[in-house]
Length: 511
Image (cartoon, rainbow, N blue to C red; front, side):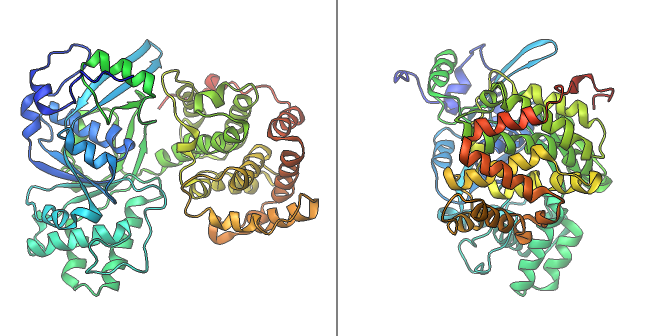
């Protein structure tokens, strides 16, 4: 039970606290001007972007705070404002040198707004002359338009339309001056996310018949950076751990989050843009590069692909967290094999095998409880982005079936029937196919698998054209239905009895 005597984390508490268990911000950091905006209030941005800017502020390399914008009123925006934008990040993990622990109160967020409630205040924020950076993390489905978006909506429905209206307000306010431009840094795991977001903003501008001055200003003064983000931020600690930490810190924190030590923020930026990213030099986890593609391919296909596979299979096996899944006697073996035998070999990026070895270590971090149900958020879009490229590439390169990936896809299909994720805006396409299945006959399941695999508009590829893929998915799905997922997985591992890959022994150099 939480201690009701503990005060809530607020600025007056930080100013007078000398708790050595935690790194507190200097009082001066709590009054820095608002120089950045982030669309999103979730755990990832708070454990990633906001931490980088907090580090930069502590070293005198940025000198500004962030306004966090949520799409809807939520507990997070209320809690952020109640706590004066302050919250705790607890970093825990294991490295070659031993256990890593760091507790820090983050002071880089000034306040939170909700688009549906505070749209006028958000447009006022766009008129702030000190603004320099705009970040976002709206998940893989956020980089998309809504045909219902209108210029006079308060707010528009889609994120790209909200951003367009925000930028229009800023451009008009400053008569499209070059020095009023801001750098857009999306953090969604979408290929060429900056390029895609820029094109969507310009598409909205054309639909709204915005004048040429807006288009010219975007091209001239508002760079959109392609990025790759990498840090496991599971979110809030469980109740018992939160109580333990709050007693140690001496305050209650409704927004406390846990994060792993590893962090990588790769930002594609030319020389002119790099001079505008003053925060980047404050942390070695930020990398400015001419091409973000290798970083993205390696991370999305190995780490995120691994997450998506263990979420599909692990949830069906009754696992609740990533560490529980990787410790599972069969699922852990499956994960090692699918990474080494079917994902790493399809990548043409440096140090892929070593990165996979590091990922397995990160997944086994004993301090993180990364819920599989959270990883399954918008699961169908993640299967498309994180797994389908590996399936297609393996078929192209070998002419054979990626057996472990086929099993993972079959598990995804079964999950969509037995325990579909609470939020999966594209999952209806597969659930509708399941509704046509009247029994577990081979013919009925074959029709299901063929229809699911051939949904090229959903997968951005026709998986029925990968030689033998649909047949193996059908076989695995039939076994799962008849024998159970555990027995089907055991059969897969026995049929493909390969020595466990020793990824850590790869000759690749650590990146």
